[in-house]
Length: 200
Image 1 (cartoon, one colour):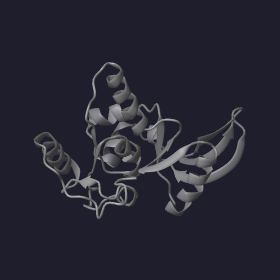
Image 2 (tube, rainbow, N blue to C red; image 1 turned 135 degrees about the vertical axis):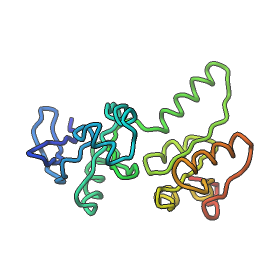
Image 3 (cartoon, one colour; image 1 turned 90 degrees about the horizontal axis):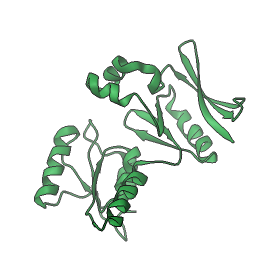
Image 4 (cartoon, rainbow, N blue to C red; image 1 turned 90 degrees about the vertical axis):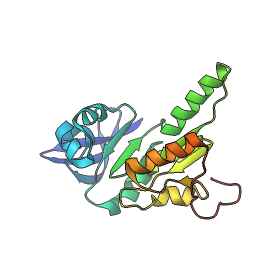
């Protein structure tokens, strides 16, 4: 079995493909010292804008490894290397996320299935603003895309969720307005013309 690992050397990290015994098979991408777990709560606050308590809650990772790379042009190389090994790489706003075997969509489907087994059928909606939210948005009846901080829709979401609803403002303001629209039974604007068969 092979793993993607991150070696840390004097303030820089190197994304590497490792064997189960820890031998390095391939060196892929050099990064600055930007692996999420290495940043610490104070730096995570600065980079993400999270509050102190929220940054502390974000630090422990069980199902993904967020990191930053120096050279965005190298991302497709890492993405292909991850896929060859059964892992996924996706953008989650500023950070890239390396994941394997788990995503937000799986969590939603598992939760909905548990409610069905208990005899309760729920209506589902999900809000997301980045590529890491795509599995979640595909798993719900009513996906709602929230614009990024700059007001633009994430290109991956726009391409893959044609016809989905979107919030009219970014960040908390957009999330709040979208949730209120859900609770009040109102529709939101849609992302371009719906593709045949609706969202992919």
